[in-house]
Length: 115
Length: 109
Image (spheres, each protein chain N blue to C red):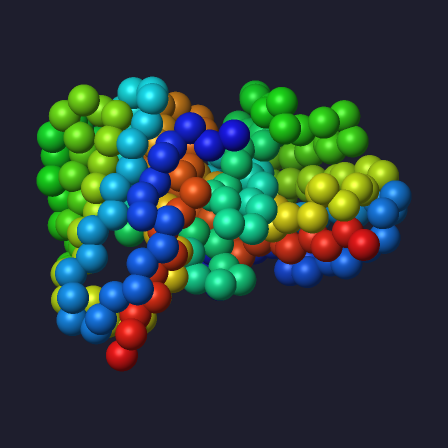
């Protein structure tokens, strides 16, 4: 499978614990995005990397959230001291050109449940 | 929060019927996109529109980019059971997509 892959697909954790999600983009794509989707809503932009550089962060990304893309390939999204409000689907996407070209491909998401 | 207003929120349709949904925005976008999301999956791109006034088809799907660049609609003709899902519009000017809240389509066989 050469699409965007995310791991884990599901994570249940207790409030206050740290969680980390991994995203492997399509291999030739240099742009990588994280989105968050809550029930009944569309995805909301969190952050964007071009190669290893994090170029934009949404104000939704509080200081408990950190994303990295150390070698310009895979990316991790870590949430520290999780809260119940962090429960959501975390979607990763990648593209070769700008998102506005429409050639942006999403992974299947990592669903987080915080108890 | 969401910048795009998508309607209707949900619809029940009879198999074989045509479906129409639309999306409006307070902001201008240079690109409009329509995605479909199945339960437990990520969104999949259906149609991309790049020019105001553009009308684009993809099989039974037709979408238009509004002339003001602040709206778009999606039509599905002759719906079939596999059209069930959530349809999202999205607008983009550069690196990010802004999504609507989705239209949930349920098909009655």
